[in-house]
Image (cartoon, rainbow, N blue to C red; front, side):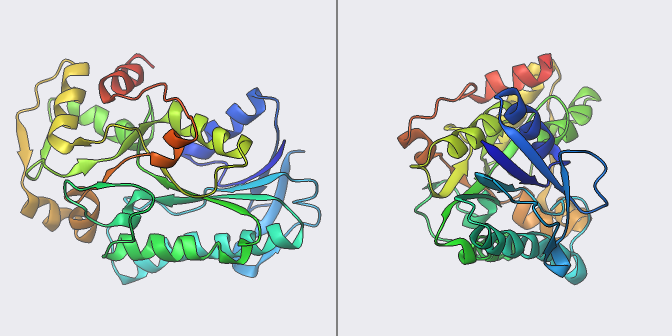
Length: 294
């Protein structure tokens, strides 16, 4: 396949490009600077422009664009950046795949779509929740509507675990310095997935034309924050006695604490399992052990 990837320099994008090439697919990377390599094509999402020929011969476009949700404290301006960094590139690529006859658009989204669902099990048929993250994801997915005549896959990604980067990369130093602990009451669910499985699942949906619509990019066994904390502590041989109170998290982090840290989704990958995808790390212990070994 010839796959065009936007957001190829990010945490997931970098690994995806390597995996696709390892599987002998041809990859074209969209870059916002002047292209300097043979596999790069330029584009300017705010201007709605792509280099001529950027999508020529493409079998699929994968869009992973989006500013980091947890990179900065939320205020009105930051929320607008988070929204625009997702919807604007998506709108441009959704229109472009139709214009250039590309059969498939695989577009990023997130489990934040469901809002805070407590201990209710949610799958791809569950409607959007409430709050900023849920509304952002709803608009993000709605931005694919221009490509409704094509096969569109919307990846509702959970918390990604890998040796470096993602959730585990940020938490590992805290645990290593004996600062790991439960966040709030620890009852909020954390829908996680190993990086290996996330990349394999994206390849799976690219290669299986029967998969379309929303897809939860999560492992089949979401866990509570308390269980996650115990599992990571055990893998790193560190005690996890600390508790970070909810009010302290809200004071330090603001809105992201309430929606992204103290809230959760017990999301399961019903679509992937129905189509026969096999997880390398279906259980958290194995995923964390692999990340520690890596």
